[in-house]
Image: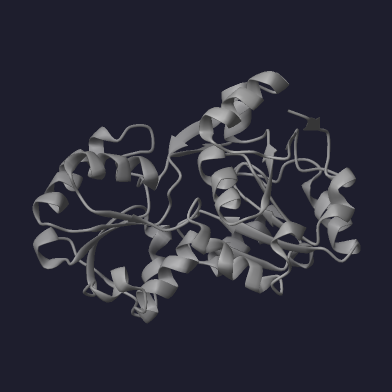
Length: 286
C-alpha cells in the first residue's frame, strides 16, 4: 500500500473531501499539526470540505468545540454528525424504526450529549419501565471509559424491560490524546450479546453520506474522497457509499500500527477488513 506524506498530490483529483474529525483533524484535545494549512490549501482551490463524525452530539455543539481548538469556520463547509442525524430522526420520525418509538428513553452517556434529544425530540427518564427505548451515547464520567463492566447492570435492566437501543456512535473506541477510550459501540456490543435490538446511526452506514454529499452540492461520487483512521467505520462506510477512501495513519491507526507502519502490513489489515483505500496518509497535512 502506498503511504503518502500529505494530500497535495490528490488535490486536483477530487472536488470534495469528507473528513473524519476524531483521529484525523484532532485528537480530542487539539488539532493535529498541519491540518489548518491543509484545509486552507483545499479551500483555496475551491474544494468542498465536510466533516463527517460519529460524535453523539449535534453539529452546532461540535462546531463550538472546533472553535475552541482554533479552527477557522471558513476552512470547512459543514459538519454532519451521527448525533445530528439521530436528532433529525427523533424529531421527524419518518424513518420506520423511529416511527415505532415512543418519546421516553433511558440515557447512558454524559450530559454533554443531550443535544441529541433537545427541542422535544425525546424525554429522558430514569426507570426503564417508564421508557420506550435506550439512548446510548457512550461512557459517562461516573462509570468511566475503560471497561464495559460498570455498564452491564444498566444494560441488563434495559434489556429486561424490552427496550430497543439507539446507539448514536458506532465507534468502539477512540483516542483522546494518548489514551484509548471506549465509545458507545462497545456498549452496543454488550447489548447485542444480551440479545437486545440495536440500531446504530453513523459510519459505516452509507445512508449518513447522503446529507454530506447534499452539503457539497451533490458532486459525482467518484470525485469525492473520504479520509478516516478506522477501517471498520471510516473506510468501510466510504466504500459502501461509493466513495474513494484514504486511510489516515493518525488516531486509532497510529495506536494500532505505530508512527511508521509497514506498507505490506497495512495492506494485509485492509484486506482482512474488506476495504480498499486508494492509499494511506501519514497525517492530514499538505
